[in-house]
Amino acid sequence: MKKFIRRDPQHRDQVPFLQLLPNLVTLSGMCLGLTSIRFAMDGRYDGAALLILLAALMDGLDGLLARRLNATSNFGAELDSLSDFLCFGVAPGLLVYRYFLEPSNNFGWIFVLVFAAACCLRLARFNVMRDENEAQTSHHFLGVPAPAGAMLGLLPLFLALSGIVDLRATPHLVAFWIGLVGLLMISRIKTFSPKAMRIPRALVGLMMFATVAAVGLMFTRIWLLLVTLDLIYLAMLVHAALQARRQGPV
Image (tube, rainbow, N blue to C red; front, side):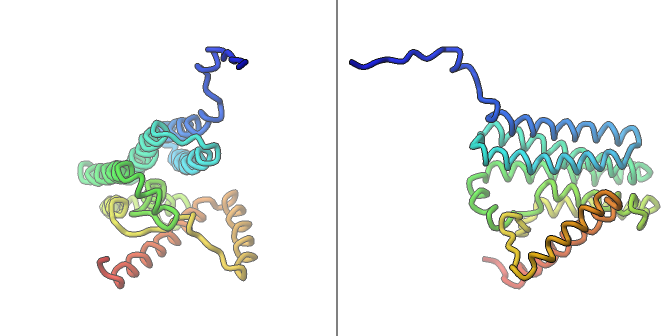
């Protein structure tokens, strides 16, 4: 005789906390982006930049958690894209405008709009090509990802905060720069994906020492570290563009 187990209806209305955790991390990152905007309005530019950096770390963490916990969903993917637009399209644009572009008035604002719109278009393209992107991201990204675009867009601010050069006297140059970064986000250049990174065994020791040096700079000269990382990423972009040009159209 078969025994039927009655399930408590209350359990069917409950969601495991671990399934919610990636979305909670995404919302936390969104809050960091919003707070960055507030800091920029208050003139606390270094704090605003650090919050965008933390939002980028949260963006990487929520995807990792979703995959490890098998908690991926269409809802989570859409929430992540909306958060990315705020944190890496709106917040960096407003921060650069407040620090560099206000004297240029409408001219600088046009390029802020270009940057934010490019970020939005990139995320929309990623969403509609999600299945294809999942197959490609193990090798490369198509165009500069939104978090990397935010870090590149903030390069003039990193240069100023590190004491290397202050470009507030040349707001038009900064405006053209963030416009260029926006174009790179919607470009079809194959850019670096961490999943494809392979370290030769001979360089493992060097990589470990480089990590120690990076952690030391993070607590002593963080703006110089961010400038260095931006320049390394730019060099990789130039290499990828030249390689694509040599190969020609596929």
